[in-house]
Image 1 (cartoon, helix red, strand yellow):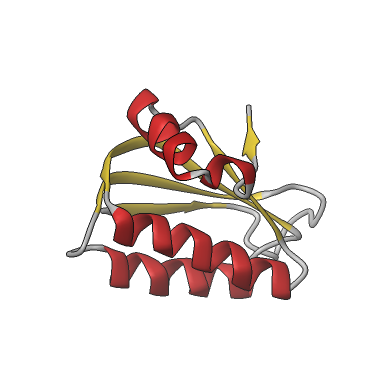
Image 2 (cartoon, helix red, strand yellow):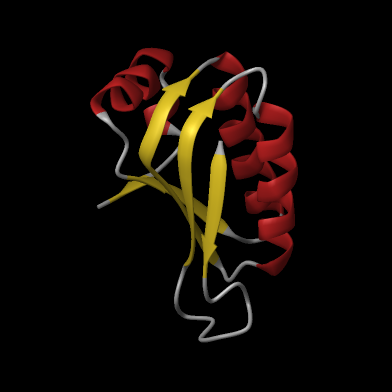
Length: 107
């Protein structure tokens, strides 16, 4: 799993969203590290955090749990979290689990 954070990370224009680009697999081996990286990003995020899933090649239940947990933490901090560009398998996974209703998508 690779995480690439895109500005502004709280230092530039606060009206621009913070974007995190994920790539690779989100699974039992990468979930803990991803959780810590996203929590750190929340501490420096603007009021909108977008997680780009376009390069995610696999996601298991642990990965979904990370996304749900980060969304809850973001909400507590007054940050809006949204997912973008999920691949078809990821869209289907979010749909099957019902998480598409709770994790907003942006185009």
